[in-house]
Length: 133
Image 1: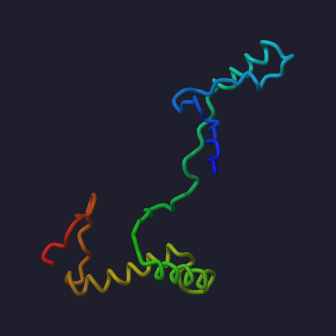
Image 2 (image 1 turned 120 degrees about the horizontal axis):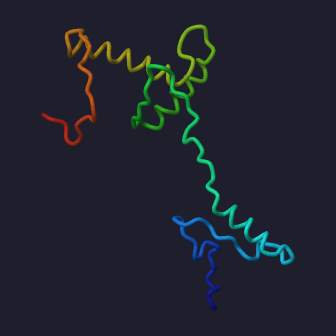
Image 3 (image 1 turned 30 degrees about the vertical axis):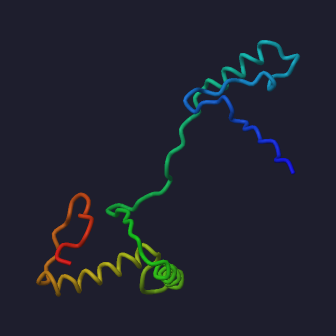
């Protein structure tokens, strides 16, 4: 049994750092030099850059990244869906998470910080083993 011949990539000889060169096969045979010049001009014309994100972050809010168990995330999404449009309660997952963190912080303030707010931490949190553990 013989192996199939390896496939050839259509990207061979191209560089991401250089603009694409016109392919002579793309121009019609009777178009002449004008078509080749037009193809070259199109290839060398920079394309407008797209905006990276169209997300609008509400005033006074920041994005939080945290790793949580998949089942907790799934149930939180389900709760947010059920509560959307309810008379009381969060209108979306972000509000549900913010309310849950606020409730937990209130309990932690009372238990560990004399009811006072914790000092904000600027920059990254320490990583590695927990001190005193």
